[in-house]
Length: 282
Image (cartoon, rainbow, N blue to C red; front, side, top):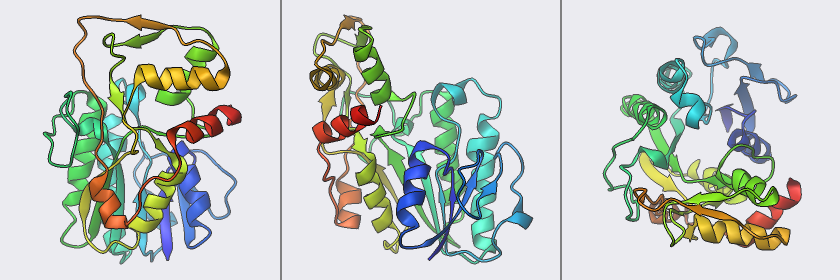
């Protein structure tokens, strides 16, 4: 299969590019060079350079985008996360591909203490998550011409990641800095997914024939307190906490039953092993 993969200079895209290239021809579209042969260097803040893209392709996997606080504070959020998604989906149709895979976020759901399934209320709370939901809708507008598969990620982690939940927790523990908790129970609850399992889910998604929207989350439901204590144990240190009583409790507990059923796969890397591998790499 010939695949155009965006965002291969980012954490998720880099791991996907390396794994999928073992079975497919992968052409990457990146903002920063990675050294991969045939890569296309382009910033999605600018209009898609169609003349530099393959004239024919089988699938597009779109992982690139502005994320988190960088997106919330950027005037380019709409351009990169929504307009570029629309351009890429249109290119996918014109390149006679059949499949468009869009990496979204579990943050599109309304904040709640309950488990989040694909039927949970969608009400993104900030600029970033609103842009990802708008990106989903842009991709879905092409469903008459494409199989559109949307993956809502819950805390992917692993070696080489920086500036996200788990690497930030590792740095706080290593530097004896207190970690903020919503309450004495150590919430919020989260469902981290190790990168090797994310890659295997994606490898199998390429053989799912129908459009869908699915959560991509780990099996382990764990509080931030427990997660930090697991990290501290691996580092032979003590985790420090700062409880902010009165803070509204919102869990980010993603249910992965749908994607596991579609792909006949369940995460195989335990949370403890994933943390050990991540810490060793840091």
